[in-house]
Length: 358
Image: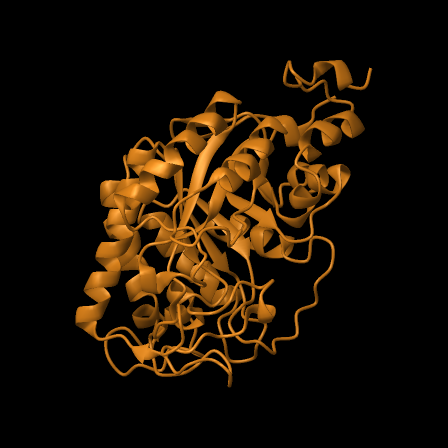
């Protein structure tokens, strides 16, 4: 029997041992952006658990690009050095090490979600700062009105992404993902809800795509040709008049032309009141449509919890990989158990082999 979930996946020079991806999941577990023992255990256990690719959480390209004061960062050399042993452990246990680099934009300067429900922190408060965005439009009535970035400011943002990519490479990561989803800075430039600029970076679809594509170009120029570059998008804002699937197809074509290898298809995050029909695999049709219309490999993500569900997505060619988030928080060893459910003889770590069902 063919088991597509456990078929290797080669992207440029990198081969994943299977199609199971640990989605980037913010841990809010550092006061200074430096990876800690928590990150070693969190990410390392998923590599031991059998995933093909383990992606570190959204890592801020600058201090003002953090969501919260406790975000992981990659804007200085100390942060990159702290990730090196984590990357080595992931690789030593058979997984590919990836990182998502990000800027929170107008959604920055908030508490972690488990502190005061992620309430915004004002610029004058301890640990707070002034968020930035394409326009002076706050994410919600409770959020600080962001500073609208000037064209000179945008040059700094681009430079921050480039140096973050260089640090990720120095740390040993094999796959880099640009975060263009969930209402954060690059997504906020794409969506007409948050981008109401009158210059070359606002208005038409081509103008709204300009900054994300410029950053992609600049990052691809420093990220080696033999290593994959991924982009996570929000395929729709789930709001009338906002970013949608048709625009996502256009963006995905442009990203492919810039040397992007995989589109990681999520959705939402642009407004706090969007009505999202969440359910098992609810975002998979986005991955399927972009894969078909653009001809680029895609990753499906969103309430994928069952082995047969993941296998079905791949066998029916709706996506090339599946990313799990909450399910892998509940069970770091989900790939080992999924193999058992599908009747695939997956090799267990030798330290745990005595527990393998036979």
